[in-house]
Image (cartoon, rainbow, N blue to C red; front, side, top):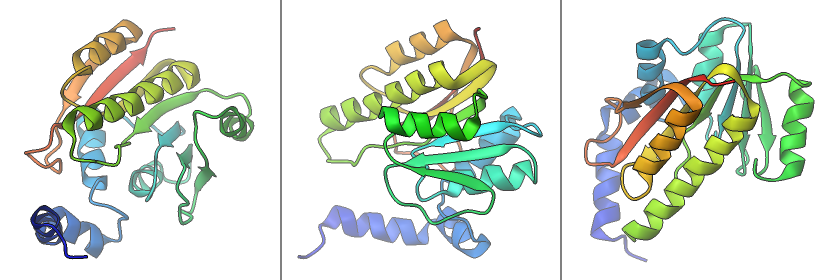
Length: 206
């Protein structure tokens, strides 16, 4: 089946993308690591010994970056419904974190400990129908927020991908009710034409 003009253009853009080339040359699993790298450095999100959970982690670039930055200490747990190749020092759970059995698996791994930082770089499968894609993206952000509400410790931080559009203002309002500070970030590695931003909520209220 021939490729559409838009998919051909996306492939051309992807393979000429300097962040894609850099990820390949440096051994990262995705260009998305450079979004996280900028946010980690700007907001100093990581501290030695932290427990970090990466939701929707496949292919694993964010978990890979966090594990490297934490060194030998702390813990990184990656969850995704997709299978993921192992990463040294990262505990991987394959399954849907909205399901009780998967949450119980996480809680067993953590042995009752709460989490310092929850990351979510989840995106819906894009259909091209903006209203539907926005609704699906907001749903993923909402389930990540509910996960963080339960599993983050007081004072903890939550970083979530958000697509600006219907529902995003209300979502930010809900974050401000639960956290001391909420900031919007647009890393350089985010494509300029994308509505994607990251909401960083710090200081979870007890």
